[in-house]
Length: 174
Image (cartoon, rainbow, N blue to C red; front, side, top):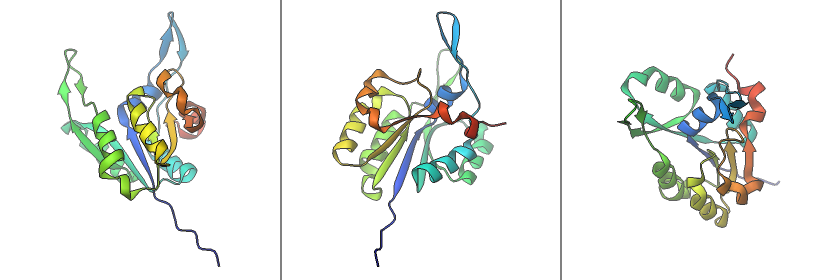
């Protein structure tokens, strides 16, 4: 009897890129070319599990103490949270750039634990990470929130790309 071992597929989620890529209206020449929407994070976790067979989903996010209830909800949905300390920028907004943490987790800390990886970000800063994982045969997919938030550096990885806005009807918070 044939016995196929279950694969460990990890998702590495750039929460800021996901949030901004789905929720903001994007304008070009004064006209709205992309209308933002509210992503249901519980539905998104199920989407990752069902469609991509993700066994662990790491949500990289800046830590703000007032958001504890939200973080607890994310954990209850199944996400493993990886926090980055935040700083306040000149506009008074909290910033927690998590790119380095995603690269560290995916290429070093968790590399030997997973068979394939799914990334959620349209950020071109991960180009070298995707190249590294592609050579190792571990790059499964790159989920990009919308076509306007995608870096042109990701053109090389077209076979891995999935655009999340196409799943809006399934994943939108009502």
